Length: 156
Image (cartoon, rainbow, N blue to C red; front, side, top):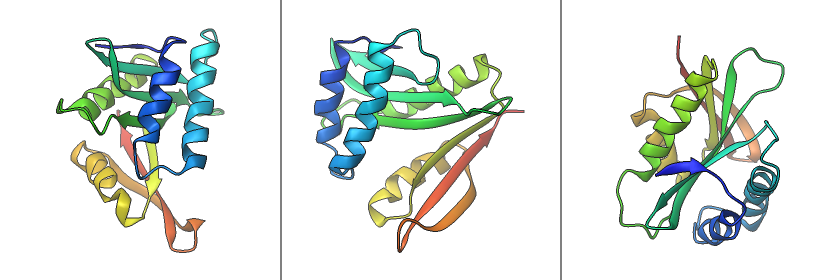
């Protein structure tokens, strides 16, 4: 089941994020900032966070939001699946849910950003398999040799 985040989910998400070897401590802190905003301020409208729950366990989540100053561009801030889960397709289900959310909110562009590091090759492949295209690359964005890759999916 995919549902809106609840306050009690934040600690479970923190534990899940810490298991993902690609994420640095700083990246986990940034992810948790958004998790805590969404969990503790349900009336806010910047970060829409949904969890994938199975048998009372949080196995993944996505955080999506409308890009300010646009008339229909949304960002996929985070999409995460528990690396210890044996259930296949969590990421795909979360992405499909996020796309549905964007469409329901009159989104026309859906953007996702990631790193060019070799350790993010599976992430880049995931977006390409799910019909995103590379719309931009900014060289040496995160650090020298680590480029920002921006994927996009256009709905109209």
